Amino acid sequence: MRERRRPIRFHWSIPGSGARSATRGGDDRKDVNPVADLDVQLELCRIADEGGIDQLLLPIGFHRADPITLATHFAAHTKRVKYMVAVRPGIQSPTYLVQQVNTVSVVTGGRISINVVAGYSSQELRSYGDFRSHDERFRHSDEFWTVCTALWRGREPVDFHGEFVRVEGARINTPFTSAERVRPELYFGGSSGMASDLAIKHGDALLRLGGTPDEVAARIGAVLAAGREVGLLFSVVSRPTRREAVDAAMALVELAGEQARAVQDRFRRESAESVGFATTYGLGADNEQWPRPYLWTGAIPFLGPLSLALVGTPDEIATALLAYRDIGVTQFLFHGRPDIESLPHFCQEILPRVREREAAGW
Picture 1 (cartoon, helix red, strand yellow):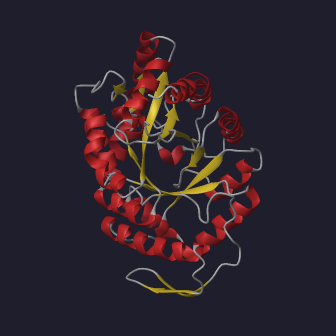
Picture 2: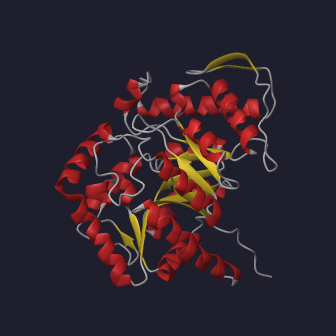
Picture 3: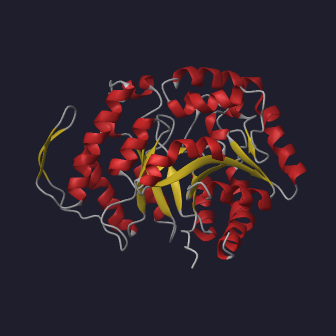
């Protein structure tokens, strides 16, 4: 009998602003008001809730609202979808994070997970009071999640004295509340070997920037062998015909313009220590904009690494997703161009095609 594959899980990133903009990422972050279109962000949450999206990412940064607060707000207005809150371990205590997350789980019925991010910029992290180097942040993260896991597993009181983290007698009386799990799912973000190591040791999945199936397959073997899942980040540009999809993708570059390129030139320098961002910017610098018929790098110099895009008709996008599934990728996190149009299109046109093919044994 043929082994039944696990269904692909689909997530969506809620923008800090610009849910109606096809060129978000092209504006200077210091000019972003993250609550200017909060009503539209909530509309995206409702669309995802009804459309079959599994989780919604709420990113973190100085130009965004607090993700845990947003998760509580959005969950009160939705019924099913979960919220993946981004966490930077270097700017808070592990005990307090567990208390926050457990409390949100109680009031949402367990609809919270965690996206662990080390931070792409030491400059930004210093503004939060974290002066660790790139490698130190990963070592700190290891200790941080060791304490969190002990608390979630009820090994209280928790005493830990490490290189960076020290707690004595830590305990949290509010339990993590879920019908499915004893702790939240942990998604470790990053494309470096250190990110993979943390995902293997502490996590449920590695969440990394996309690439061609061959490139991705060469970097995720150890994570899959350890029994962890792998998720990829892409933008998605889909239209009824391929010509329309390609034209819509190309229009993003013209719409973004040279001002957006200048913004990304600055951000590329600020985020140079990020392995994933550096690699993806490199793809955007290549003259070959179509490393695969469905994979487009042309917007990266203008809209950044998160604009690496799957482009095509709904059938072509579904076929591409299953090609990644064949190398072991079982989760995807998407950005829309713009989100308010791309998300309902994905739920109505692409997701059903994937489910039909999964049911048919593809």
